[in-house]
Length: 255
Image 1: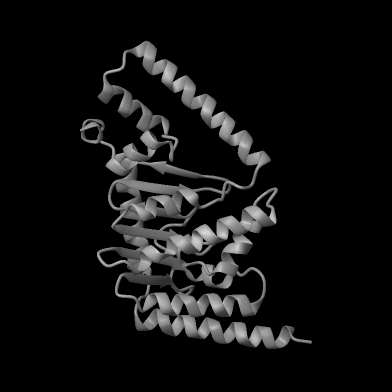
Image 2 (image 1 turned 90 degrees about the vertical axis):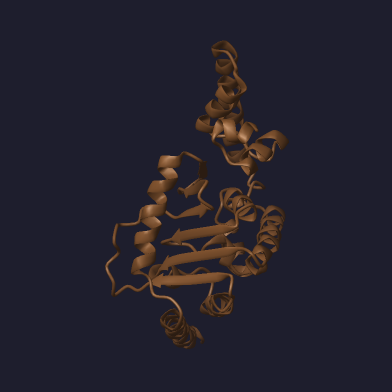
C-alpha cells in the first residue's frame, strides 16, 4: 500500500489523490520515493507543487471564499482522536454560528456570500462531536474565554454552547485558569489528528504536517498544557463565572 510505503496516513493519500489536499513538500517527497520516481521526475513534481502553492497564495489574496479553518475541519472529520489547544480563538469545532461569522468576517476581502458558506460548512462539520467512537479533547487558556467579538450577548450564547458540549461523553473540555502559570508560553494554536498529523495554525494560514518527529513534539506539548488545565466541575464553575461577568458587562453597556 502506498500510504504504508510512504509512511503517510491513508486519509492524506486519499485527499491528495482526489485533489482535496495539496501535499506539503515533506509528504510529496515521501510519496515520490515510495513511487520510485527518478530525480528528474521528482524535481518536476516539486516544481509543480511550488507553482500550485504560488497560485493558491494569489487566489487567497484575491478571493476570500477559501475559508480559514478548512484544513482543521477536514482533518478532524477523518480522525478518531482529536486534541486541540488554543490560546486566543475558540477551536473551530466549538464555535457557535455567530462566533464563527465574526471569525470569517475578519478575513481580508470577506464577502457576505463567502462568509455565509463558510459558517454553514463549519456548523455542519461540528456534527462529528456527537458521533460515537470518536474522542475530542480541547484545552484552552482562560484568555480564549475572555477574548470576545461582537457583544456580551454573543459570548453568553457561546459559553452556553461550551457548557452543553462539555457534558458530552465524547468530549473533554479543559481550561488553563489565569491563576495558573502555563508550562510553556503558547505561540499559536494547533490540532492533533490521531497520532498521524498535526495542523499548525499561524496568523494567515494553516500547515498540515505528518512528520513523525514534529507530531511527537506537539503531542508532548499538548500533554503539558492538558496537565495544567482544569476539567469537569472546575471548568463548569469557571464557565459560569465568566458568563456572570459577561452578563454584568452587558448591563453596563445597555443604555
